[in-house]
Amino acid sequence: MDAALDDVAFLANSENRVAVFELLVEAPRSRNKINEQVDASRVTIARILDELEAREWIRRSGQEYRATPLGTWVYDEFSGLVAEIAAEQRLRGPLQHFPSDLLTFDVRCLRDAEILCPDGSDATAIVRRIVEFHRSGDRIRGVARTVAPVFIENQRELTVQGDTSLELVITPDILDTIRGHPPSMRRFRDMVEAETTSWFVHEDIPISVGIVDGAVGMNLTDEDGVLKGGLLTDDDTVHSWAVDLFESCREQARPVDPDAITA
Image (cartoon, rainbow, N blue to C red):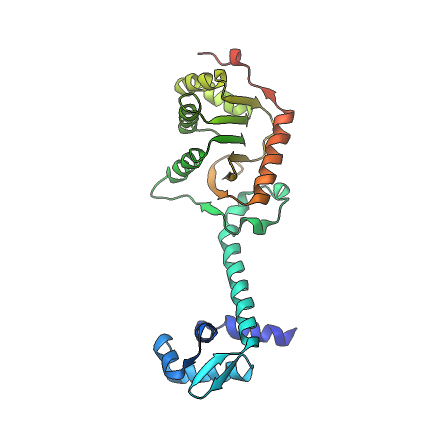
């Protein structure tokens, strides 16, 4: 194990080694060509070539160096590990706000997810991207524990004025918030009465999740309900997880009473 870790460290501790190795995996090259393409001294390049050759990862043939089958194998696995670590680093921050008991799918399913991050210079950037996501399909399903007037306005436009179908499970707090904002209340009542929408209330919604056709969006909030970011993905496993969460909440929810929403 120590010897294997030593070889991993040999590559991981030097960008120049990786750069030289990558060039030779791509195609055979002379030392002069490598010197032209890697920003390192000739002495450093010569030492790296000797070290790679000593490990049987490259072989010299005439004036050219080329990767051996063993070297290609090692480089492919090493670059794959680097890519996985890079994906994990992207997700490390956002997943701090993902309820751990809900993470029942393989977290690697999120490796290609679009990450929505707060922008200090544009506080509405995440909200606009969520609105854009909601407008990207014909069917919206989901569970929500937070609301904003712009979401209500957008959903009314899509459903009452458009032909998007919507099924949403919300918390009682959202209903109270809507009642306290007359413009949102009027738009919400229009949607509750529309044939294209179905609204339900459930007290225990752990995370806001939207399902737009085959894609999933997740709003990530802190303990105070402040939006900290989001994730968008079209991964099939995550989609199945989101549908199960939505259906579970809907089964335990009660329909919104139109009469309870005063105009």
